[in-house]
Length: 579
Image (tube, rainbow, N blue to C red; front, side):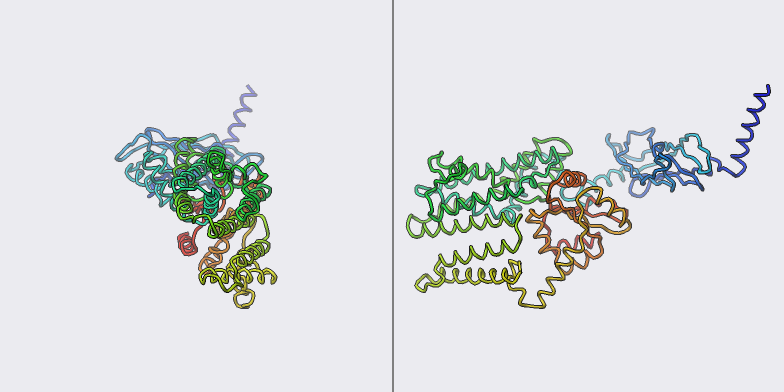
């Protein structure tokens, strides 16, 4: 009997202490709420009393009385409290719904908000479930989903991926064929022009327009197959195959192949090279050269193929999200064919207008030999210092101008004029190199102090303003330190030619510089393609640089503002103004 009395007194004391003001009653400690906002989303949360915290894992949302589903819940970041994940500041949730069964009209439903928390003073409360009766206009929800699936809320690449999901196969293939034609006009595809032209010219005697067309088609088909395979693998495994193929030894090897092809066109040997691949490329006895041309087309797509752009990224996003490698691969193949159509025209032209054997044939072969050497140097730009590249172009230009007879007076006026222009520009490059300058467009810019100061200031902005990161951990630290500011994250690599164009053309524009000063500039350098850099790229859905990602003041990614590929200064300035 005495034990019962003691237990009763203990319970009485506990209850009296809880409700005497030392501890808050449950309705004071937790004040849950939920409402539907103007964007057809649910705003829910719990206002916490003084010295109250709530367990993050105990807080959950459930819908009753409706077939609407929860698509996404945005939650605040929890903190660690004695080994538990808790919220010490009133948590706010933003809930996005979806309508999988196509409901219409006004929908009434119940939202259940579950939670449990404790007081810092030493009392833990029971679990609670609060019910809210909510009303939603389904037509407004459908409108919001439609906007988010369009180009307004989605990035270009995500919108293209969404188009593949919802479109018909025929429309998808035609659309991507058009994308390919547009990509064929970009600088990333230009190096393929001298390659296919040189391969056609290298066929020598007996080349007809029909055969030139057939060889060009074989080259483009092989290129399309290679690009499709690489793209599908990248989409399925999230791998940056572009980076894997930019290893120095790969670049050096392929550059040597182009040098070997160029020397053969200069007449150093009759297409009998020690390398088996090059021998096949130039052999007329090997099925008319088709196997060699196909081999070069396959390798060209992998090594000097186009940069990552929104259509390519969209197809890769679709493959990565759905695992549908067939439809994604068909889209990539159609895009590759679109890119290759102008190359077919170039190849046919090389065969159709190629002069008959003689002095002109020697000149044409020499021109394509110089073009092949230019491609070799262009590839080396990814791994060598700009000053070395500058002097290599200079030596090539001086040598070619001498071949054209720059100092001879009895040549044709047009030919002599071209030789003089090439010689002057090449000498300017060499002088610029000696002066320690490395600008291909302004080799003598150091002579103008105003231009020099201007270029130097731009260079400082371009280089010094960016915080370099190589991993998720490094980026997270930067994001945490700069919360409350707008942040621009630039995925870049030394071997990425489009990245260099972005730096040298877009980032140095005056209007762009002024707008970029409003952002914290961060550069994810993925040159080495390490495991940490791969993880960083994978986290943000980056299949290859350049990609520009924008964070708002809450360090949330603004997916609709993501830019994939090269963007002109004017367009980029407008884009920055919209943020």
